[in-house]
Image (cartoon, rainbow, N blue to C red; front, side, top):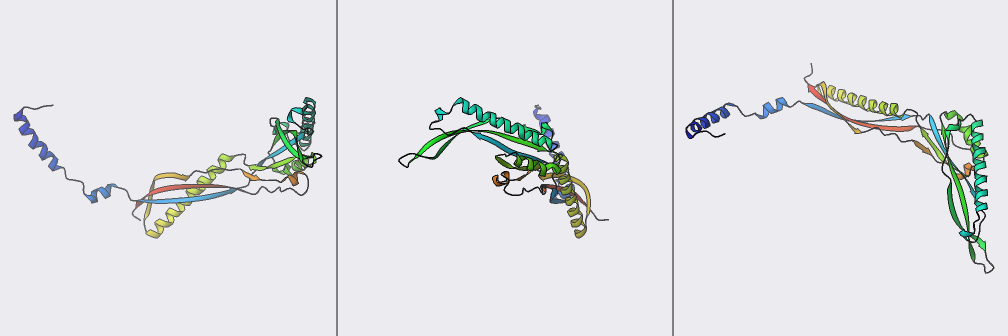
Length: 259
């Protein structure tokens, strides 16, 4: 917008006068508008006892060792696979006899792995490489009742599993446990704020900000098992222990004069 020269001469002094009327904001006025706050950071740990577990086991069979991989016959592979499937079926029957539901057992994909051996000696005392094939099937067993765990582990060892890769302890309701850890962290932050306010002689007003510094993370607890235990050389460990969930928060309160 443009003004004629006479009007512009009258408008500019008026604008300067209006700007001079509004007083600049002083430091004290700015501080009065900025709320005093008390910032508290708190962390909490929650130890929970798992109520479910997953067993990881493996079964395998081998074909006879031959001089070259190409010499492995289809019949040998078929026979090894049949033996493996028979053992897997017998194992599942043993587990069901212990009260485990059939849908709780998951059989993984068949794995075929050539293996190079060198324990066969030739006439000149030099090792002759030999090759065989391992057919392996992993099994994952979900245990909803930990009271069944000892009998299930005994059934696995009695069935002659080739490897027990361990037990993973877990919770049926992870969300409830992580929520409880977060509530515990917030309660700790409140306790710290009240303690600080009482010591400093101030009052706590409303919460003006809250954030997580460490979101609750749940990690299943693993228990490794050796092959010796899978072969029945010693007693298995059945104690689930506890799972630790950590949570952290940062909460800010407005400070009020103490009544």
